[in-house]
Amino acid sequence: MFPNPKNPVSASLQRRDFLKGLLAAGAAAPVASFPYITRAAETSANGKVNLACVGIGNRGGEIIRELHKTGLANIVALCDVDMGAAHTKPILKEFPDAPRFQDFRVMFDKMAKEIDAVCIGTPDFSHFPIAMLAMSLGKHVYVEKPIAHSFKQVDLMMAAEEKYKVACQMGNQGHSEANYFQFKTWTEAGIIKDVTKITAFMNNPRRWHGKTFTDFLPAQPVPDTMDWDGWIATAREHAYNKGYINGDWRSWFDFGNGALGDWGAHIIDTAHRFLHLGLPTVVEPVHTAGHSRFVFPQESTLVFKFPARENMPACELVWLDGQDNLPDLPPNFGQAVVDPNIPPPSKGTIDTKRKPPGKVIHAGDLVFKGGSHGSTLTLLDSEKARDLFGKLPKWPKSPSNHFENFLLACKGEEKTRSPFSVAGPLCQAMELGIIAQQVNTRLEFDPATRRITNHKVADALLDGPPPRKDWEQFYKL
Image 1 (cartoon, rainbow, N blue to C red):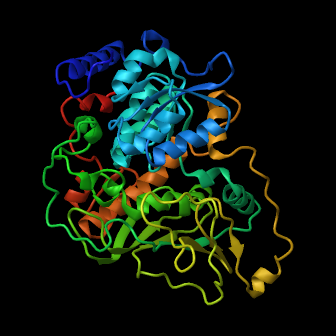
Image 2: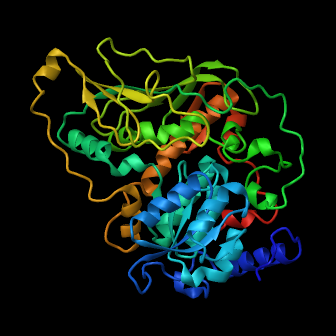
Image 3: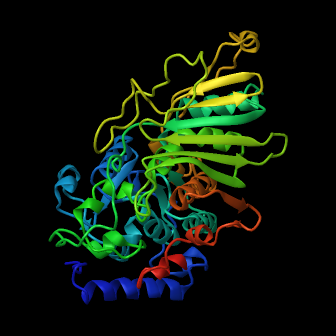
């Protein structure tokens, strides 16, 4: 019987002793030097990747199903801080023989030698400790977007990916679909070049829209099924309230990343990668409505200024969110681009008819429109464009979807398309935008020192809150 994580003696002692042992062995030492650590390149006897799953309800459950559906993974462990709650039961029924855990630290303590990889479908703010421990144990990592909740956490995760030589994949699934290969092909062919402005927008309803908060939520009794301390993880201390869980965490600066962190990874990811945007030097909230210290604004328009790179000009990226904060679109924009494979939201609906998420890319004399996820770009009609119609290069078909790509990378047969080295700078650029939303002020960022130079409070937010007791170890792995 595994220790009960709600028992402060048995659970906390085992967690602390496990991490102390890991740190004492030297996380920077070669992987083979610590008895719990196994290099995850070798898969099970049936040639499949032994996959442990942390966060098994809602979106986490969908990730598990997609990874299992590839036929490339054995589900060897299931872990959730609210094990037995209604949203975890479907996955428990689908994989009744998989060992069950309520604490990922106990799972790795007991099963590290039997695990090749881990998928992480927990809330944004708890990605970091799970991924850091997994990587330090030599396990490959699939994690939903964004990969972490602070600029510093992303830095540490990128360093760990390089240090431990594991395959990592951020879950922006369009990075393995047609938009990825089209954008890559068209930039390499010189079709998309001289990009000076990108407009990206997400105008669908969000959970915090129409709500106001003057403080954090009042304490409520913790459900018997939940390990609340494990749920909080490396976030700031909060008393339990049901208004924080099951997707509502997205509303709060302390837990989520708002519309930008949630959808930016699906809308601006290919532009960020293939235009080598890197990190902006200025982020300015030129419009906010309903600014709050606690939850994301009802509307925001952010202007990111990226400097010139190599042979590419400086680029301005304008991000708009909010139901009525609509972008100015070119007069010949026409019908919006909609990807039919967008996963359904855990609450509400995605309005794909009136205000679907999308982007406009201004590239010299050419203008492109696009949607989100894997949807492809369309070249808008113009005199210059007419010379290219019928001559645009074809792009290759994806050899594997995002889930297959990750598992094949675990087996050494492919490389992940959205590793932390690629996804990390995108997440950090979005994090600068989220900080600008939080302080509601123009920010100046120095990419050389990687600090905000004009606002002390905003600069401190790059590091996130100080780690809570027994969670600081994850920053040292």
